[in-house]
Image (cartoon, rainbow, N blue to C red; front, side):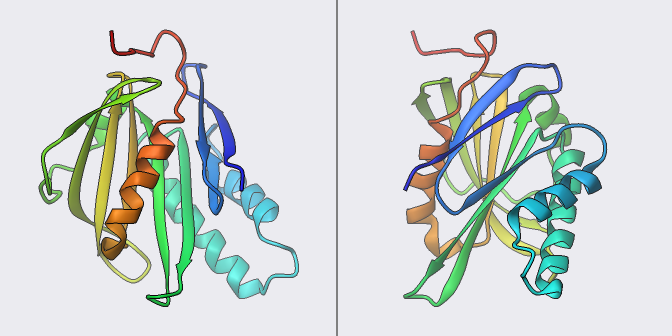
Length: 194
C-alpha cells in the first residue's frame, strides 16, 4: 500500500510535507474554526451510512484531540490505528507537528521522565533528536499512561507521537522513525548534517 502524502501550511506561511502510512489520517489545523474543520473532516472520512452514534463519538473525540493539539500550537494532528489479531486489540497512535519555538512553551513540566537516553538521528530534513518518555494523557475514559516519542528536527520543528499501546513499542518506534524520515521542511528550516 502507498503512503499518503500530507502537505500543510505553517502559521508563517511555510509549506511543510510528510507522508503517513496506510491506516493513518491527517487533519491540518489551520484557521480558527476547529469545529468546522473537524465537521468537514468527519464528513470526508466517515461514511454517511455509518451508525450515527459512531459518527457522533468519533467526531467528539476528534474535536477534543484537535482542541488539545491547537492549544499546544500544533499545525497538524494525525493518527493511526491497526488491529493486532494476536492481542485482539486495536493499536492507536497520534502525531502532532509543532513549530519548536512554540512547542517548548506548551510543554507540560509535570510529565513523567524519559525512559531512555535521547538519540541523534540523521533525517532527510536535517539533524533530529529523538526522546522517549512516559506520561499521562487525558482521554474519554480518564488519564491514560502513554508513550511519548518526540523528534526535535532541524532545531525548528517537533514531531510528537503518543500511544497508549505500551506493549507494541518495538513495532511502533520504527514506524514513527519512518514517518519522521518523510518530513520535508522549507529550505530556511532545513538543517542537514554536514
